[in-house]
Image (cartoon, rainbow, N blue to C red; front, top):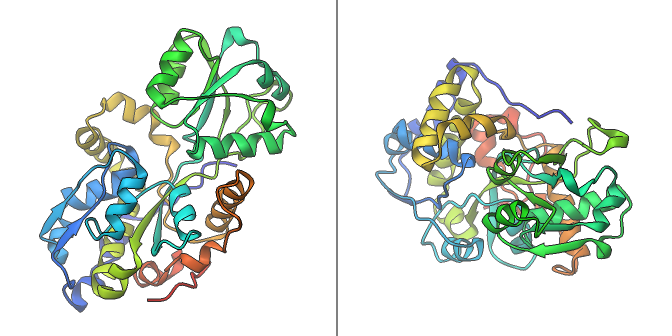
Amino acid sequence: MKRRTFLTTAAATLAAPAFVYAQAKPEVSKLGIGFGLDPVFAPHIVAMEKGWLREAGFTDIATPSFTSGALAGEALIADQIQLWTPGNLPPISMANSGVPAVVLGTNCIATQAEQLIVRNDANVTKPEDLYKIRIGLLAGSTASATLHILAKHYKLDESKLQIVNMPPPEQLAGLTNNNIQALLCWQPWAHNALRLGNTTMLHSGTTSGFAANKGAKVQISATRSLFVASEAFVRKNPIATRTLMAILVRGQKYVTNPANRAEVIDLVAQKTRQDKALVEAIWGDYDFNPAFDDAYVADMDALGAYLVASGRLRNTRSPLDYTFTDPVAAADAALVKRAGRWKA
């Protein structure tokens, strides 16, 4: 699977949300956006730096960060923030556990950004070789789901894989000193692991590096980041919700326009406090695609199936049951190929 791309002309990018702004000012001027030091926040960064949020009536903007997804989710439901942009695993779990959160948009497809990096001296050339090494990953994260899908695809017994639960910085250190022989992580940790010099990408989220099918398109990651709000906020603030999503779609279109690439990378590097060369190196692993389509449903279903298989959920609903596509449709109707069934 080649990276799915979403391109637009500069003229369309600038014009898309104008009709939304002209209708009415949002019900609230204060907006809390859960923020992280990660390239997936490029549309948010552009919207703030260009003044689009302020022009639309959001004059008091806060960007708090959280040490965990659980804390960010609690802040969302408590109305301490109004927009959350997590990976898709937490919202799927929440929506299927009765938490009143709703998906408003799909921000970034990050399947390519999750990578299995292995030490060369581990001599892993085929899927079965994974049994003999220790693999570092953050248990319960999207990396766990990716490994689950990998094992299922290559017919491995997942229970025989030697998993070491550790956060990304410890994974990198463990790979360096050979306490683990592989890590499965997202960017920039995968990129940094490859820079060690004695490592190889054994599998990305979309492409195999195993000897027998090297280069084959095999999607083992279903990770994407989403725009999520509380049901209460959406119902109470329909104009603010519609306006916010129009601005974010505009931001997604802006960051995918090749003419804006250098500018956007520079902004992201500044606001995330990352080295510009690093952002440049990993930028191609992110696909800011706002379309609600079959791929969206498939990715959400795949992670829902993982949550059931791992015992974290008994069953799952269709992602369309907790997806509200009306605001994105108001910004650009062509983006909604699979309509959500949640209604305000």
